[in-house]
Length: 383
Ligand SMILES: [Mg+2]
Image (cartoon, rainbow, N blue to C red; front, side):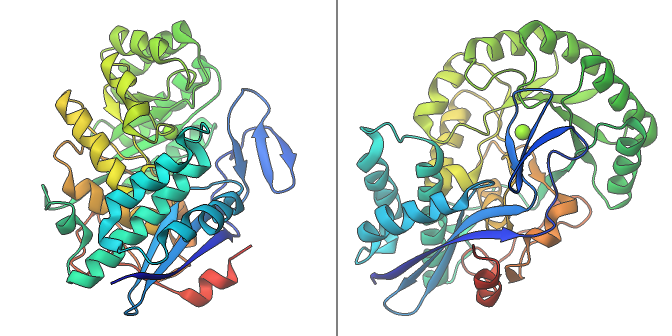
């Protein structure tokens, strides 16, 4: 079996959840950046990059590289750099192909970012092909499943206490037992919002807080201590993404979990964060790492007795499906991110796709990812 053709698609689906929500922003042609802090650029729509790989015997695999902005960059990398290497190769050489493509650009300093996102999309598509070829779900190809179902938490993005409490209540009614608030305002405001949410949902619902790197070390520790009093499970992205020592200092100072690492794509990037024990919960994003490298990251973390909670903030339905297989197939999985309010919009490129029930994803025994892509919709949402 050989790869016959590789196609990449930059996707934009209108009306996706806007992560900047009710924060004050500067607008830039469909994108926005919050005014208050040095935080990420977001699209007003769901944007991502998909890869379709077809073999000479007609098997088609799909992959996703998480590109929440500028997905045409990932498409161009796949078209110009990955496709020439892949066409004519055997899809079962998936780990070799990831390594060959990674090595092709490491000397140029492209060991992360958009380039590795493109490799993630290719890697997931190759696993989809392998699963469809041998008629097995991907978790089986990855070595078997460790659990019966995948616990998820749902994200909430509002800076208003009563709106956050109301949203938490709606999510609890929809069956979620764990919720994460995305909060970037002052420590006082955050504590007020979380207290209102805790009052609303009681102590049966787990709460997490993601502050998107907006604190310095002492501010994060102060906030964490306040959140511990509200029985918050974890504090995420506690300070700047470059500050491994600051993360470690915060992790040691707090009793609650420090969760981090959505920006770390390879085991080489993860290594020093693990060695410094700069976090308590690792958050690799499978649409950035791919499944091959994601498994290596999980194994490295497991060696150090560190759990995995895959990040899925901006991912679409292919990323969701790949993350479920990954979560089933690693020993140290803890909980999976899920965007309840954006799920249906982001799933518009598929006819059959996973959805959680009562706060859990159940395994699909369909071959490969278990997603039936709607190719007409992919073309319709391509930019
Ligand atoms: Mg996050």
